[in-house]
Image (cartoon, helix red, strand yellow):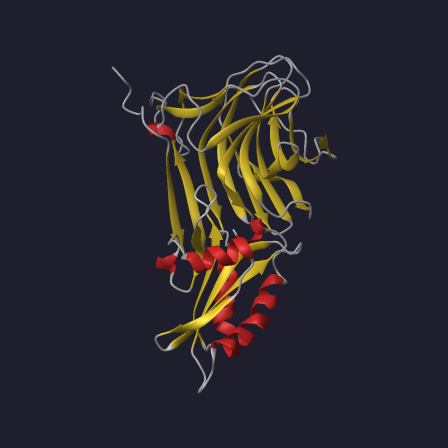
Amino acid sequence: MRHFWSALVLFQVIVCSHGAERSFDFSKSPLNTIPAGFRSVVTGTGDPGNWQIIIDEVPSIIPNITANAITPKKPVIAQLSRQLLDNHVSLLILDDEKYGDFTLSVRFKTVSGVLEQMAGVAFRIQDEKNYYYVRASSKGRTFRFFKVTNGELGAPFGPEIEIPTQVWHQIRIKCRANQIQCWLNEKEVIPLLIDNSYTSGKIGLWTKSDSVSHFADLRIEYTPHEGLATILVREMVKDYPRLLGLRIYTLEAKTEEPKVIASTKPEEIGERGSKIEKDVLLNNKKYAGRENKTLLVTLPLHDKNGDVVAAVKFIMEPFMGQSPDNALARALPLVRSMESRIHTAKDLF
């Protein structure tokens, strides 16, 4: 009989006034697999870790009232590989989102290890060789923060502290701009850190060498990230009230068809463009014309190298006697202002 939790990983996102909260529930994940949305990678030598969903006893955060209370079992994420390599780090990266300002909490348990008994969290991950991480070591009796730059470790920060194995603990990390705070079991045991290297990035679970470690109750509170395209649309319409609408298009990778990625009307995001937008994107063309009582101007947006990375359509309220050529002249300074903020196509997203 299949377990009732043999389904896709479930996570919940709640958007509220102060940001968004994302909590992960692995009770609906297939056992003995990597949860959906995560990717296993390695830093240093050796093979990627053996990350799986398994069942483990996880006590409630609220202490049991009776001594004979049964500890509940539930699915957790475990790193089960035992690679006896000193320069070997297993990362399980949450691959679908980058986080700038966030507060993360996760429970962990170091289970075994001959060389190391470690568990931690990597954050603001740029790639496998550039990120921050905080880790607990039961064998070494330390709780440390590190920065990894091009695969090289920076100086460690953090205290010597007893971290018993086979016991559940909690790591909490808070990032605001260049400020980083780290807690172990609700105690801020590392002083406030300030570092400007990485302002945003992905989040991942971390172990080293032959450490077998379990993780549960992963939760992230964060400020949702806005792409530059969305910001540009909002600011342009605010600064130029005679703009009736604005849309930014890029080419969809698979189809090479134009698609709306930002608009004054959110319901238009994802809609396909026309031959005009496609010609602007592929051939660096400019268009201006009338539609009903409005003027439409569609122009290319260039990155710092002069390459076309998007097409922008201005929907304008005309002046008395204004021609499409006049509208084109009005739109060009707006485009130049937008281009001054675009370094690469990635900025738009």
